Length: 106
View (cartoon, rainbow, N blue to C red):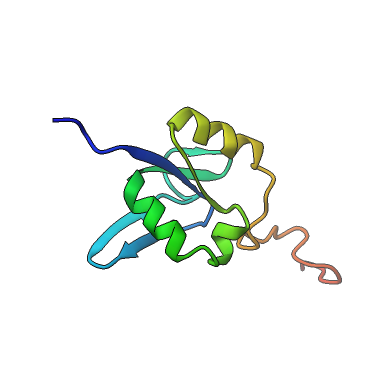
């Protein structure tokens, strides 16, 4: 029996994300996962689930901004993750030496 076709999802959200459609759920690895490429956690997900989820949530800001993407293979997902490594989420940790403009650490 052949396994269902999968896609590899890249997710740059720190804690990942739970994708849900009805009773089906898939948890995406985020930037705090044990294996990260270019700041993206990579997770295999059934291709038909991803197609339905991404169609239903096409207006979801992280999806529109490229913080979540899908590729047909792990190699292509890793390549895209490396290409978009500089993409900022706005959820990065604060640098204590330069916390914000006009703020001087004590």
